[in-house]
Amino acid sequence: MEAASPDGLGPGTLLGAWKLEGRVGRGTYGAVYRAALEGKEEAPKVALKLAVHPRDERFEREAELLSRIRHPRVPKLVGRGVWEGGPWNLPYPYVVMEWVEGMGLYEWGRQRNPSSRQVVQVLAQLAQALGATHGVKGLHRDVKGDNVLVGPVGEAWLMDFGCGSYEGARPLTEGPLAPGTRPYRSPQALRHLWEQRKGGKAYEARAADDVYALGVTAYRLVTGQYPPPGTDLEAKQAKRQGGGVMRAPAHALNRRVSRELSALIERMLEDAPEKRGGARELGQALERVAQRGGAEEDLPLQGGVAHSAPTVRVPVRSTGAPRWRGLALVVPAGVVVLAYLLVAVSARYIPDGSWKLQPDAGLEDAGRVGLADAAVETAIASRADNVELGESWQAVSLDMPKGPLKGQKRAPCRPKWEVEVSKACWVQVGTASPPCGNDWYEWKGFCYVPVIAPERPNTSDGQ
Ligand SMILES: Nc1ncnc2c1ncn2[C@@H]1O[C@H](COP(=O)(O)OP(=O)(O)OP(=O)(O)O)[C@@H](O)[C@H]1O
Image (cartoon, rainbow, N blue to C red):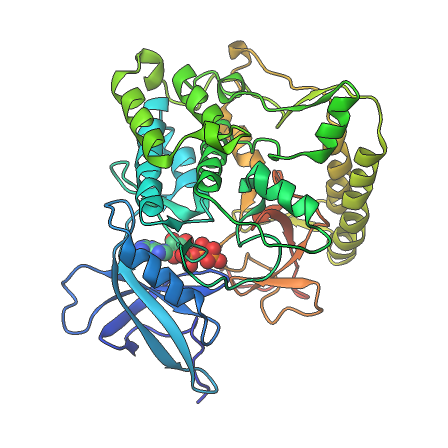
């Protein structure tokens, strides 16, 4: 019988004292299982995160960091261990933590249609969880909506400390930037990347980077859009020539966002790290707003709201850079997406797992990258337009599904430009970055399209 892989262990498998009940997720480095202490199945459940790469030192670091943090909004570490298995009987470390019941933050935003006050309450909890992390000289380094779970009564959990670090920890990755997700990088990190692109020292992440990432998370949650990158070099260049990209405050994109919430988001997104304030202090400020805000704090964020393009663009004189950027996007997108979407099958996936024939899908998508780059002005619709924010939320990007879509090619993914995510094959759309729109899926700061299976299967597997 073939030996089980760490992400394919069945219910009932024992890892130390823990009995697996089923897999709930698979990330780049770990597979997460719901589990219980053997013989104590009635006791609270735990999440067991097992490395998918043998001897992965990240797990030791994640466990160490979690063991230091004591905060009700960070899952408690309840155990750690090593599973020996796989085809070569290698050691795969695992961490065991408190089980958290909840849904992803952006999904919560879509489904629950929260008010500014409810968002502020969620952000306050996250800021306090971050404050506790920073208080033990730790860093999360991958704060984003995908790493936040929100429970049934609005309790927010800061999850996934797999990219985290703490003072004195040995660096595990090489390269100019620590792990993280592109749209959430701080201006300092992006500038460092730009300045060190030909080699040099690694960027030293700071607590203020986590605060910035929380600001990006909040901005996306309430506007459905990412703010423009912290350091947009094209924008700087354009600015010198009389134009530039500016961030529209959250309340200008969604009029139901209260001024106070919008101001706090602006503060988290300040260019200068010292102006962002510490996470704990921010948490307190958010708590104050949650308590004293007026009636505008209680308007649900979706429905009859402003709707706009992702950024406010002030017309700029043409410079070389944007054209090159457009080309950089269009060429790979054209080659890869056209090859896969047009030639392969000329059809498009719909997230509900159905198919829609759309002969020009590939062309339309490739073209849209260039068009997006040439967008000129924000159009803020009036309330009378009655445009639901839900639409723009959905338009940001499609979330990467937990498994293969109906008809999508499954792993193994070959040739080498196909990328495996959750056992399905994907192709990155050139250098396009979020927002990825209604047709592309977002993963780790880039946009992807599914690779279509050679034959359309009859099965009805969902996402
Ligand atoms: N303590 C927990 N309780 C309940 N579910 C959890 C817990 N930890 C993780 N999960 C679930 O498992 C999934 C995978 O979690 P994990 O922390 O590995 O990360 P990931 O974000 O998918 O991976 P990556 O490390 O590549 O970013 C999450 O989406 C989450 O829903």
